[in-house]
Image (tube, rainbow, N blue to C red; front, side, top):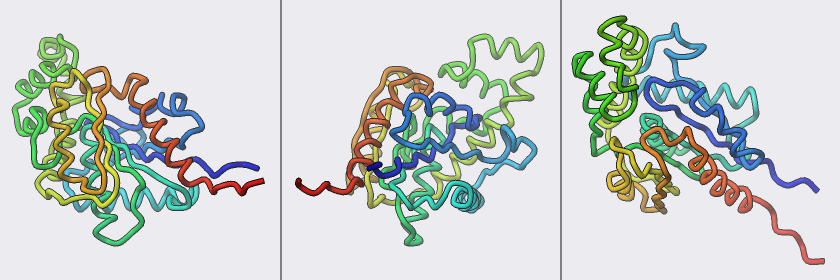
Amino acid sequence: MSGPPPPRLICFHHAGAGVSAFARWRSVIGPVAEVVPLLLPGRGQRIRERRITDHGPLIAEVDRLIAELDTLIGPLTDRPFAFYGHSLGGLVAYSYARELQRTGRPQPDLVAVGAVLPPHLRSPVLSAAALPDTELLHRLVEHGLLPPGAVEEDRQTGLWRRRVLPALRDDLRLGEALCAVGGGPLHGRLLALAGEGDTIAPPAGVARWSRYAPGGFELRTVPGGHLFFREREAPELLAEVLDGLRAASRPMSSAA
């Protein structure tokens, strides 16, 4: 007899990125969960669409994407489901979970956020949204988000200013807007992941998500810096947690 279908893990990418950020997660997580990254406008196949920089349009867009998923792969709520958001994506995951809660819709069984400070704090990158291009480039290099030679290279070619900074700056504006809305506690379980060497969202700051999770909070640290999602430890950790969700949804077998 086959078991229940695997949980769905809805993934929200970090600033300046797209769904390719989670390209390896399907192979790492395997059959434990169905990994479903959501692509926001202004990147990847949606490069020509206007990027979102405010809370209201973001919620409307995620609503639309979830409705699209319901049509393509079946209702999100027909099995356990969870959110994972990395950096900016963590604020998106939290904000959308809050909206579901506010409107009385089904909640995710787990909200997981990685490499992001809670809304009442500001990371050194998120607070840099309004800096001039050169200063913003320096800030990104300082925290390991761009290669060390990016500033000098950009002075020669303008590559980073033309191709990277516009999308990244708009995403930082979105992050600022989500923080400005603020928010209250989630009723469900919240898991926060922090990179041991992350200078943008260090573990001590990520731990302060605990005030948003009276229903259950856990902080887990993994090796790496701000972009730790590129390594195996984070998806393996989530696979373990999601396997627990799947086990919890499995009906008890009757005694022989």
